[in-house]
Amino acid sequence: MTALPFRAFVSDMDGTLLNGNHVVGDFTRDTLEKLARKGVDIILATGRGYADVVAQLRNMDIENAAMVTSNGAEVHNLKGELLYSNYLPEDLAFDIMQEAFDNKRICLNTYQGDDWFINTDVPSLNKYHKDSGFSYQVVDFSQHHGRNTQKVFFIGKTLEDLLPLEQRLKEKYGDRTSIIYSTPQCLEVMNKNVSKATALVQWVAHKDYQLSDCIAFGDGLNDVEMLSEVGKGLVMGNADPRLKTLLPDAEQIGLNTHESVASYVRAVFGIY
Image (cartoon, rainbow, N blue to C red):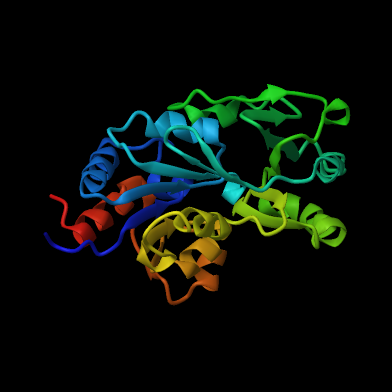
């Protein structure tokens, strides 16, 4: 039997594995199922929440998979068992939820437990969750709670809307949190030391391989550590320009709209 070039396949979802309609395309689904049958672990590493991601994986014929969700705040296996978590302390999460911002330009969100909370109704966000049906609950965050908070995130109309908020958050909470953009319009706050890479370290600690045995794909600033620390990290052609600047030596592949991750995987693993 030919040795596998990598033991685990790791991929971000939005802008990477998912196509232009924000779903797993048929070509990609077929690729991942064939990859899994070769004995390669399938790991989805995303800013999305567990309840959102597991619904998509369960639509595939895959037995062994892991989900690194909320940028690394949680790791689950396909059975739904929580293998690792690193949440914001309750009082800190609540304080961040009370930060001031322009609510005509920015909306506030949290992932807490299996729930998604938001400060205002934004129907356009549902297009990102068609496959899973995962949706938000509108709440008054001044009357909310900070329990089981994987992340607090702010979605702006533009990057420029978020920059003053980013600076203030870093000044007030930077020593206790991880603050990163998952897209140029989405600023995310997790507990200190949360990243996709640290979560992957927790995963491989229970496996018979290392980070160097993983191949990973990403398109956002929340992928920097992951792409830097695995055996081979690949950057999408449609990636955030800031990611390309930070990882100038990383190989770039095609667009997520062309299902380029699947095409690359088929070539590397000899899937036909």
